[in-house]
Length: 326
Image 1: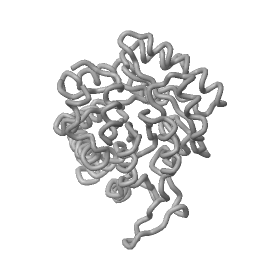
Image 2 (image 1 turned 45 degrees about the vertical axis):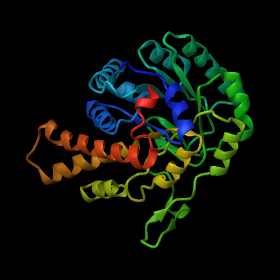
Image 3 (image 1 turned 90 degrees about the vertical axis):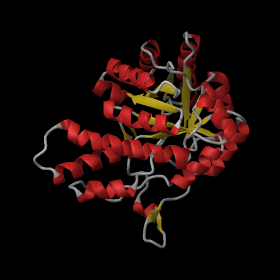
Image 4 (image 1 turned 120 degrees about the vertical axis):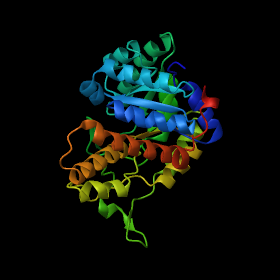
């Protein structure tokens, strides 16, 4: 089936208490690993591309990779989404260039300026044929990932969400409730240790999510910075020459709880990077004479696939939901 926008996906996700996985893509192996998992699990998916990914892999190559995935997975609804669009011009280029959904990130701007730029993108996207969905953002996430950087985050103010949504006309809203970008989402001193000695980060601000949901009943909410930073892959990176001490992510049980509420889209990027990098590091140490990229990228792709499969089944709850999202 052709690429779709996120409207039907979010309607079904909100109604049935699950979230759609939004996975960042940068190359062929990542696209393949994600979509093969979705095909086997019969799950809808959002493949998202950042400004950094477009600079690295080229807009056209990425669009064609995702279009190829749609051909190879004809029964899976796939959205091609711009992640953290920095300005109207970037969003317009993606809308004109085959994307079916875009995010305009005006979260670092004053409230009225955020409304103005978001509204401008919405008006252009919604007038496009076919209709392109738009995600806006209120509140900022701390951390650094793919050119998105805020030293200090700020929680979303629930009292602003109605005005923002009504004045902009956005289709979904990203909010800040304690997630952050990158693999170092929490400092060790912010965490406690469980009975196994594992660092446990503080809980997300579900009070903010609940308040936003009350003010916007039926409206799809998005969580950015929601990688869980699997410790087995952190260990793999470190065991084979890496240096990632104290890399801590968002607990998966908290993400599953958010998916049962109004969160319809959960962004995952760092987990994919860890799976690929850990696998490649391990391969090189164990096979120092090898130099064929196919030999180390094949197991990396396989581990991305298994990671995504786990997310679809056990975290997002969207496995088996492809048909209702068409």
